[in-house]
Amino acid sequence: MKDPSFSSKKHCDSSVVKLFMTLVVCISLATPLTSSNPTTIGETDIRPFAFSGSLSLTSEAYAVNGIDARRPPGMGLVQFNSSFSLFGIRSGINLLYSTDDNRLRQNMNQFNFQASWRWMTVSAGMVNPRFTKYSLFGVPVTGGLIEMNPGWFSLTLTGGRTKRKVEFSDEPGFREPAFERWLYATRIGFGNQGGTQFAISGVYAYDSAGSISDPGKITPAKNINITPELNLLLFRGALTLESNFSVSAFTRDQNAGELNIEELDDLGFLNDLLSPNSSTFVDFATEVSSRLNLGPVRLNGSYERVQPGYRSLGLGNVRSDMETYRIRSQFRMFKGKANLSGMFSRGRNNLLANKVSTMNRQQVGGNLSLRLTQQVNLNMSYMHMTNINEAVDQAATHAPHLHSEIVSQNFILTPIFIFQRDMTTHSISLTGSYQILEDRSLMAISGERPPADFDNISVGASYGTTLPNSLSFNLAANIMHNNTESSSAFGNGINASAGYAFFERKLTTSVNLGWSRNGIEYVRIVEDPELPNHLANEFTDRQPAHRPVNNNDDFLDGYYIVEQWSNQYSINLSTSYRFQNGNPLRLTVRGLLSRPGHEGGREYNEFHAVLRYQHRF
Image (cartoon, rainbow, N blue to C red):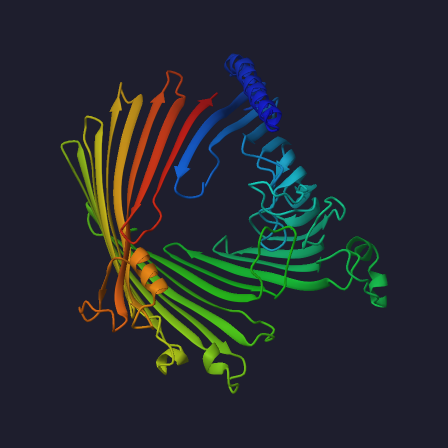
């Protein structure tokens, strides 16, 4: 019987071939025009016609055994970017096509056309409008975008589909069903972009309720977001103040019961657009920031607050119910030879005090970079973090159980040495890190549960050299050790790489070999000292590497140290050839082999190869 996917695969392959041939023809036709009209019109800088861009073709192969595949076995990717101008009108086409795209998830392929003239830009296809952090940011729109900025006034209009419908499916690769979602937004600003300006933006988005036949547990949503912005540039740019305040009316389920409130009749078209019901709620998010630049001294501060339940369909994901203060500073000394920076942040959740506990987070850190000599650089950093979870009602009987206080401190020291002699460069880098975590929770202090204390030490070193004959060599090693009350983890590894350039550096090759070993030792408690058969069999099959804590070979005490570890071997090969026209062809092959110890972990082999050709014109 013929494979039902054969026709779709054949169609996909033919589409890739047609697309590739079309791009090649476009490049062939455009290249002569670019070189034949290099001059400008009169005394202006306007060219009658100019064309430039790049084409990238990528092919990937992947194979694995022993674990689930982390990517498809084969994939093709075409990226085409171009820009051209005709008598001062600038245009461009951007395209991304992947054979890994399918109807079981959101679209991966992208197409975008844009044209601009003086202060106006028009884009069509997949566009990425960005207004503010909590209104419209990071959501691709398949539709159009118009931006106008004559100087003192700016206007942005965008609209289109942000999600395509995805029906429920049992096929591999399916993620989750989704309604077809549409979004329309506008932003009007008065003032100078990047300077003093007032702006207001509105975002309207909704799901097409009947676009999928089996929505399951998801419900069609609708959302209106209004955001005023005020930015001030003071003292010739030395001080910058930025603020925005987003109000979002979000309907979680368009099919929920009606909400009969007479005051809403006065809202006119807003009521018609939103159609509020019992699942509609209104929340806000705000962000205020400042930047002070006094030459060698820089100071940044910000405040953010996102109400519990705040959502906007113009955002990918947002973490609600949080309030955060941040301060960052930087001080350059001795003509840039010394840089001192610091940071402080404090945040909390449970803003409405409607939860049984509140989490408070605080971070304090600093970094010092020193350029001691032309050959020696030194970097030192320190970070102190505190997370405290406390019951709102301190008198409640469950308050001690909810209390959690974790304090972490991290010290990092990195000296770097660079030497050059007889056209040969040597670089040595050392890194040392020491991390301490203390559990100051009430239950741990009182002894009612073991504390989660640990200390972690990691050390790394690397050496690299470049010889005048285009030969380079690098060697790196690292060691890590972690101790807790009941376990000890370790890790170490080494990597060696070498590269060489042939044919006047047209052909470059490199190889990297790596080995790492990671493991853990922990205490296992067997409650039954006689070890029933099923437990004895499990212990023998899965835990053959054991020894009693008291170094006694009998099993009666029931305490054992279990060792688990694994080795990983990696190889990376890379080669690149640059043709006469400057276009590179690159091949990268990566292999990873994991071999567990006698504990019986998962053994697997993984290989990944990428072939990429890029043409610039």
